[in-house]
Amino acid sequence: MSKMFVKTGDTVMVLSGKSKGVKGEVLAVSPKEGKVIVKNVNKVTKHVKPRKMGDQGGLIEVESALYASKVQLVCPKCNEAVRVGHKDGSRVCKKCGNEF
Picture 1 (cartoon, one colour):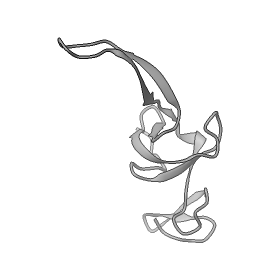
Picture 2 (cartoon, rainbow, N blue to C red; picture 1 turned 180 degrees about the horizontal axis):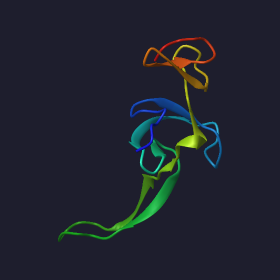
Picture 3 (tube, rainbow, N blue to C red; picture 1 turned 135 degrees about the vertical axis):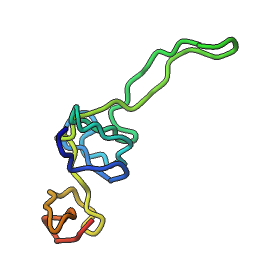
Picture 4 (cartoon, rainbow, N blue to C red; picture 1 turned 90 degrees about the horizontal axis):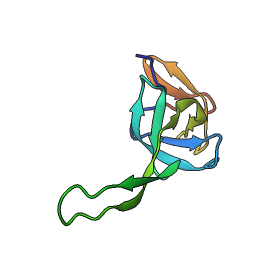
């Protein structure tokens, strides 16, 4: 497994793609694939089949995974997308030095 610089619940900004510049919360992290799922980003339409009697099938919109390299962590103090450093086992903002 590889280490990830983002964790579930972090606020990130999308750097490239159709959702460029959008901030969102990380819902899930997949270190094995190197991907993250961000709330309201990279939405795809999924065809759903009714499973039980009375269930309704159709099209639903869900968030799809995107590569972790396409997102950057947002510092809570600066409120900007920043690079992350490590100091004494905690993550540090490279811009202002704030720990998070």
